[in-house]
Image (cartoon, rainbow, N blue to C red; front, side):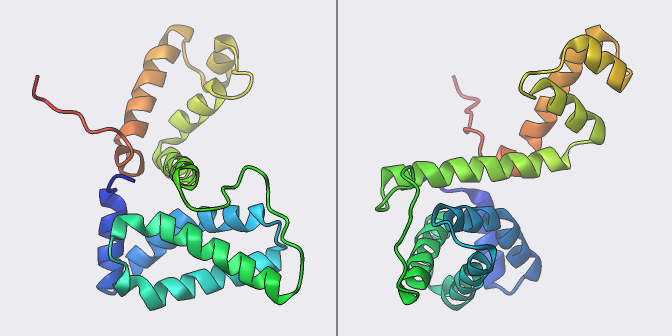
Length: 189
């Protein structure tokens, strides 16, 4: 995984005792923890227990995390291990979804990256104005709303929908959450 400056900054600030950074880590990665618990088909109560154990382990071991950018992978592995520990302690069979990678590797990394992107998009989308959220929501619905419906609902001229969409997408790309995922561009030829 490439270094994500947002993750590195959050980890460094959390190590220094910044409670807002801890909240940022939890907000950003709680969906990852929940998703892993969901793959093991844990009940809500069991998933909450696993989540609490994972966050406790992170508090205990954050200073020893050698590579702050590896936090998502560490959380994935730790959550997976906690789920297995919980299920083994109850002497239950471990039902795991077929698409969850058995061992950490390229598939697990791709899965974590996909969750990271989804989380960043949700955070970026939440940072947009209500008008942009509504417009993009209508345009990217399945099936997308017709321009005439969008025009009527948002009180916007049909000819303004495309340019407004472009501006909203530019704002989304510029949000800190999404900007960290964008490939770096070089000004050099």
